[in-house]
Image (cartoon, rainbow, N blue to C red; front, side, top):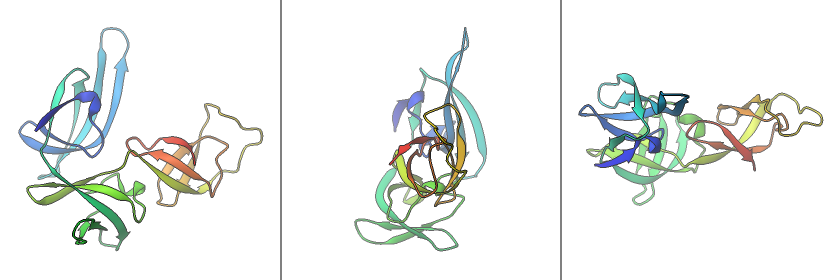
Length: 188
């Protein structure tokens, strides 16, 4: 196991916390002014029991990453009962349930390369690439003379994910989305 700084925690990471293995579902950096200091707010799910917990971890603290066996796989399709992945070395297929991929299914496009994480030879999660390119299928019409502003509008992507985008983004355009927090990065 390796220790990592709290600021290096990402969605999908596996942590050893209180002698159990937890998968990170949500995480974000919080900075309170004055004396409070900064911390990471981390929502985690126990991979064995399925219970969830929220933890505040100071940014200077280190946490244990669980020792896992990541395998390079390719997402193929959703068969209605789960998400099918193919091992790129031996071409074996593996189906993961929707609840195992909690919050990550909106970033999966067919033929996307991902790391499927195994713990004791059992699949327990997926590590996504840092960003993905998605096509906008629905959004409000373009606003005339719109430039980069602080206002955003919701846009539905081909995977069903809703992303807040700038007003100049139209339906049919491709956008790059951060898989850690679901934020719009840029048009592609």
